[in-house]
Length: 614
Image 1 (cartoon, rainbow, N blue to C red):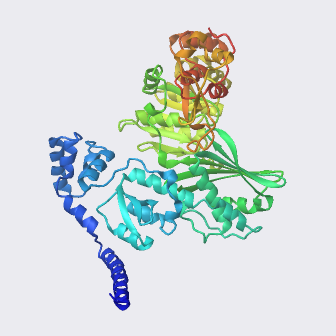
Image 2 (image 1 turned 180 degrees about the horizontal axis):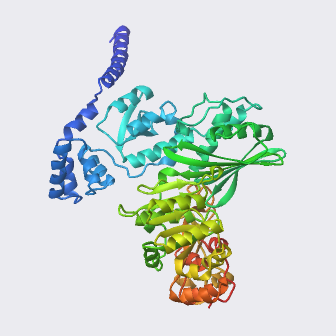
């Protein structure tokens, strides 16, 4: 073969490869590909229903029932209908779908290992709308996780955007949504870039976040100060912070997050940016940006990673500027069910018996941030039925409860707890929830309401259950009124849970064994843990998330007689402990023995019972 003939062959090979590439793009534009055609053909081997029956997920009768219902409505897919009827779980359906289409199924995605550069050119809304996310890349392919493998339109779009072949794996919408949020959180963490771009004070127009656009979608075209504040909020949500503290000092601004009840330093900024940051936050909180001499309170509604977040903003002037605190509440999480609150099985029956009474007062007590309101919401949700009229007066309304009339306190216009409570009583309520008993007037109305046939839920700020008696007496409630109206009091604390991945088992010291209240000979029967060095999951803290511990004081006949004889909190507590009440410290130490928390955390968060309560 001559050189010219070899060259022609080489040219022909290049032309063939180029034509093949063009053909692939043309095929993509026609919304088809050989691999997907093959899978579509194999889809007809077995139906989804047959696979679910073979896997013992559903029965023939259940399948037929759903198929008959589909004929009438025709709106839902078979898998959706089965999940809605609770005949199958979402995971069951997707495992069967993976078998039907011969696709790999993943119940978890490696979100921490996904390179955020894979989504640089892909809008987050595209991924959310189509439930699709790139998760890995090699020399020839990109692997994407999808929730709807039969919708090949977004896959073809990705082929054109990424200029490469695309392979599919299957996962559930919940898992893919979580992966989308986590990957775009990493790609949008540009706070430091925004800090570097800040140059002194800026002039702002009164723009706001009224459209509650997802902060992860804010782009590089935003002003640096806007991206900085958005980045702070997004980072706080990502790290599960309950509060953001922005504190100006003489030479710098310190930003701290409260995570699981503990404050952590997160950022230090030059002092010259204090005015810009305060102004931006006050604008989105609809506060007066010209007023810097008096405290102000505001609220902000934002969306981060698909979560609706309610932010309570407080500003106060201090020596070096305005100090800002933002409390974050995830509204999309909603109220937990009562059986998810971690109430000890030993006190759960008494707890539910109290909240199902027809009249009386049920109190939840504890310091700020101890989970009082969350517990009350769960209790309300537990007894919420169409035949019960429930009304609340709150400051502010934190969660929206379906079927419950919720009134918000507005002190500036005279809508106080007492004023709102008087009006609520004219609305024929069966159950009333008062956000907090703060004064004698509210306490007296609450007692009167309970005596006249209403069930009243409320909170008090005291350290334990017995102290709530003294607190009510301070509000001029007479002992006979208190003993006849109060059904029970629960004291609550939130204690941090040890990270399950990095917690360390150890042998406690003699002093720690004494704190646990167990015989030293019995220590070997338990696995005692302490916080480890920290890992990626707990962000180096050794703890992740919190759980509730509870102390329940039931007002039975003996307790009522005790209150009529003495109003001393110590005497009341002694009687309660003798009758079997588990104190907060004892409840927390039970969780230590279960391996859920550390001795250090249990002791730190519960009041020491130094008195002889036996």
